[in-house]
Image (cartoon, rainbow over all chains, first blue to last red; front, top):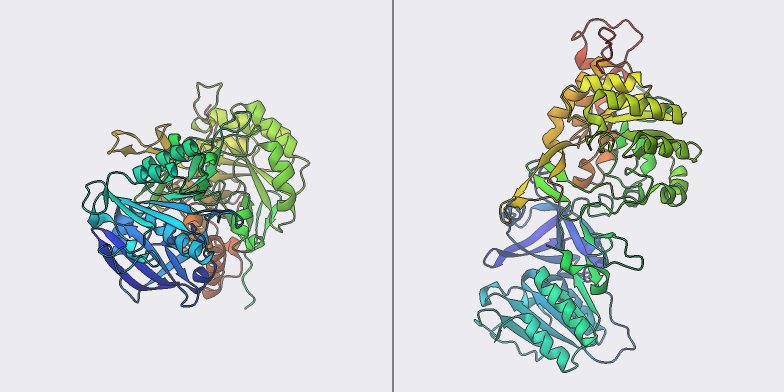
Length: 273
Length: 329
């Protein structure tokens, strides 16, 4: 059982939860997730909920997750108080592949909304590995841009984003560049500003990132979501269609163990609702 | 008091306890085997396999309902050959009886699956999934009609000497009829029940959630329904009944045992708590110990004592058979 250390609203319906779990904190890699059972041995909602690890601190034995209240499960989660305990299974899944160490140049991170969560830990590990990255963060409006303050070295908040490589894009232009985060990515790739792209966000955004990656011949990794039951690879519930390989036979991949991070070329992003 | 004897027998399978992992919720034991030693289980039932590999249904495959789960996985599996070469050798050394769940569209496919599994090491039993559509009966599932249950059971019985279990569907007018059909066809046991057919509509898209519209409901939501089916089946046949449906705790499992199930399987409960199976085993042991009951088999069907005429027919584990029924099909 993991103690909840903090569970605070950081935007409209968006929460940041800090958990004490030494095992997850020690072994989680960027892009992996934890499968959380709702409080009180709940049978309704029945299933666990998967959350990307946003940051893990092995020294403190803690981890952060970000979530948005979208249904009954997350409503219940939002009512959890510090000092309560949650059953946490993890870390699970295949995380991001770090760029080859001998490569030259920066990489790009593209976040849409809460999709920023796994990219925060990735950006930390990339900095530690000495890989430069451009972090493009998109959202509908300023109040929905959450978690940006967690990006290492991004300064105290949105008002002060001294990091030249952090770019904020909002659809309504309430802060940063107005438009879609993929417009910013297109510009970046046109300038040859990234040798590899990591993306997490709504599937429409991921499709566009995948398309841009192909157009600019830059490899893309995407972190996907799908309704999930066991989280371990046994139930085959969280299937996504694989890109047809040779022979063209239809096959499915499991988001929980084959992902949640995939190379864009592995999955049929057009086939995801 | 010595620790209670949890062992039970299903056909020729001697199980150290009555707890199985249900088909389709446990893969081939690989994933859960990383979390606990699966040899603590009474038996493992594999993901359903078919002659050829199947890709399964397009997503979404899952939809949560109050205390329940609708699924439309669509029998995604690697096929018989891959099972035999890649899964069976490992399972044979897992220290637990392995029950292979098979699915086919025709009686001939079921028979071919059973006969090709006959000599595979480590396969203790065959569980016949009669819930799949019978392509010779306008796509209606074998399970929906006792006559089809009888024909597929009798044919598979001739194709295998292994212990045979027929997994019954609750989507039928009278599950007792289906249980009798399986018994007359020569099955060694029946498992009750497979998922209940349900559906969901996505109000945002104004369309059914699932591409195939209907999906199978499982989880605690179906437990009282499954329990009734187990009671009815156990009342109707002499062969043992494996109780399945919403079991996620020892208390749930004990309910099924008392209602007449000789063994139980945990299905959707494995998703909620990956260690549900070993927890159920331990909890059943404590229950017996607290009550000074030495043998689990003394629990089986106990809730039905007096509910039916004294069987007096050498059937201590079911409720006894009422009159020998005529075949209604």
